[in-house]
Length: 304
Image 1: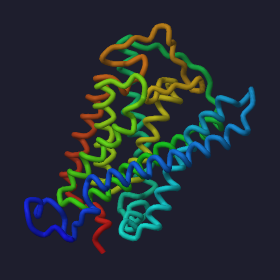
Image 2 (image 1 turned 90 degrees about the vertical axis):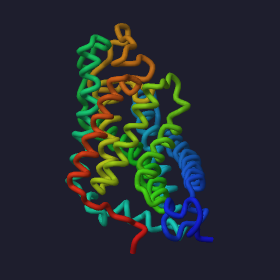
Image 3 (image 1 turned 90 degrees about the horizontal axis):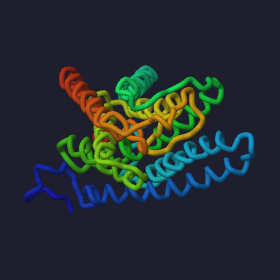
Image 4 (image 1 turned 135 degrees about the horizontal axis):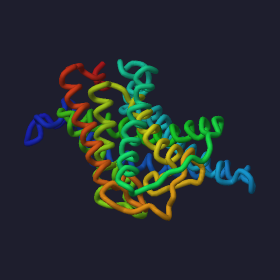
């Protein structure tokens, strides 16, 4: 039954039903999250089959990140089978004006630059020391592709499926912009070492990616910026990415001299710092100012 009268009549969009509610949308998200994670574990096991003493860590990295293709798989299966949500597929392709190679490429320096700024401040503050390790080009390219699979998978579920379902149910786009990052935080909530600064920075990162979709009409840019952020801190600077650290990276962290401060967290990395919160808040403010100045309307997948 459509909700055309009552307290929430002006809050919900025309044609709203209980299936479009926030609670149902979040339940759909977590159903896809858990099924996608299961598929990803199977993908990771395939990489482990080829593991040996010489390539164990490298294949572990590829398996862990390419395992997020499980999110891609379940997203496309779900959207292909559930007719009411099939319009969300429009947001993934070339129909949105911002889903271009150019905008995706712009996302790379955004993610790299924001993370490098946070790392640079931590280095300047004396919290971490970095030294050059190696630059294996081919391996780094393969790792970046795997990180894009990981980050892109999270974006498909959060800024793709969940964001668009919330846009379907509620008139005000800020419901989708502000609510889906809460679920993004919940995805990371069980990571060891998570702090209030980490929660705030992950939430603001989710808002930033949502604004790229809303103001710039570019899910592709959000995917690229997310991938660049993760790749930069994990595989360029060798720092923890949401608590996970690998030995394979361009620079190495001198862990013996690392210290926790408002600019860095030994267990979680730069994401769990006041610096990251301020940098991401600044990025969010810039996107809002630019978006309002351009005043361009993003694709509404629910309009024919």
